[in-house]
Image 1 (cartoon, rainbow, N blue to C red):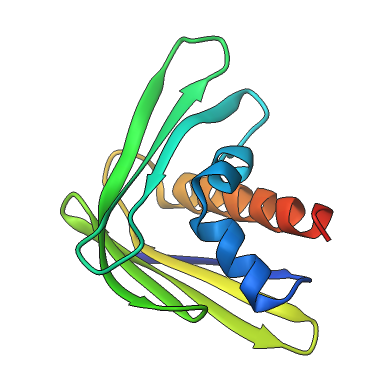
Image 2: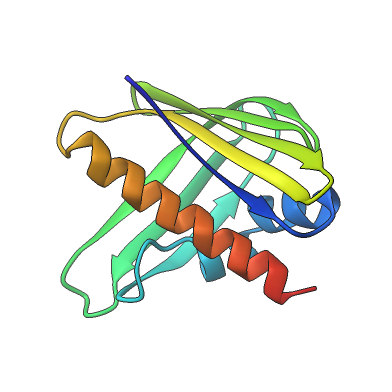
Amino acid sequence: MKITVETIVKAPVAKVWSAYTTPGDIMQWNTASDDWHTTQSTVDLREDGAFTSRMEAKDGSFGFDFAGTYTKIVPKELIEYSFGDRSGSVEFVPGTNGVTVRVTFDAESENPVEQQRQGWQAILNNFAKHVEARQ
């Protein structure tokens, strides 16, 4: 099953793309709640390039790596990737009100679909706030 979340970022597509693909930025926005943070991020933004993000609870009780491989890159338009046996994509669609960032990914089976949707949406909302605050 595929899940899609999206937001509109009020910024030029070049800034949106950069914030989505730069490790220093990713570490600032990649969290679903205030009690989590991303402590490490790497990006090799090319087809067959790898990415990783280390997400941890701020109290140190839990952490995990989100990692995968880019399968298709169209600069400022599309990122496709695989992570484990799942895949995802990120579309960047400029419009009159900003850039629509749409993330579609394969759901996993351990957590309810709605919980996954809410978590990924929260991360995307943090991304939009991060980019817009830098204007």
